[in-house]
Image (cartoon, rainbow, N blue to C red):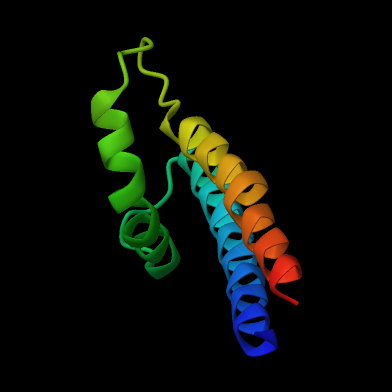
Length: 98
C-alpha cells in the first residue's frame, strides 16, 4: 500500500506545483494587460496561449462589468479552491494509505 500512497503523494505535490505556477502565469498576464503589450512579443504570445483557453470560457460566462475583465480573479479563486480542497484531500488520502 505504501507504493500507492507514495504515488498519490507525488501526484499531490506535482499538482500543487503546477497550480502555483499557473497562478503566477495568470498574475503576470493580468499585469501585462495593463500596459498594452506588443502582441508580437514572443513572451506575450506564450502567456496568451497558455492562459486564454482557461480565461476565455470564464470571460464568456461573466456579465459585463463596464470593460473590466474579472475572469483572472475568478480563475484564481477556482485554483485556490483546488489547492485547498483537491491537493489537501490527496495528501490526506496518501497519509491514510500508509
